[in-house]
Image (cartoon, rainbow, N blue to C red; front, side, top):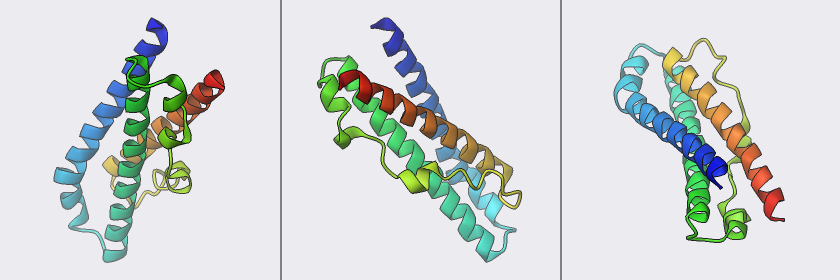
Amino acid sequence: MNGPTAFFNRTYDEAMSLLVETRNYIAYQEPIDQRSLPPALRLQVSYESMRVTSRLTQVMAWLLAQRAAHAGEMSAEQAASEEFALSGGPVCTDESGSDNEDLPSGLRSLLARSHSLYMRVDRLGEMVRKAVA
């Protein structure tokens, strides 16, 4: 079981790193980026920041359930259940935003990377559900 555990640990580390980077962007860089933007674009920046946050929250919750299953704290079937499945589908799977040149480059990067991670974890979730079925 070392292979899957190591893979999940690397994915967890990637998600945690992206989460910290997002927190730092929202806390420190986003206010600077928004100063010179018109109101409609400031609203878009806030919306897209929430989309990144939603993606990462969903990913971290799923990964923590998988870690609990690998540690024997819950069954694989429970971790693969709908209770622990990714949610936020339409908002989180929408890849728009990262190609909007009007948005700050740091936010566009976070949007692209969080989308990629969310979609990868969504595929992993599907594989886990099939494996325990």
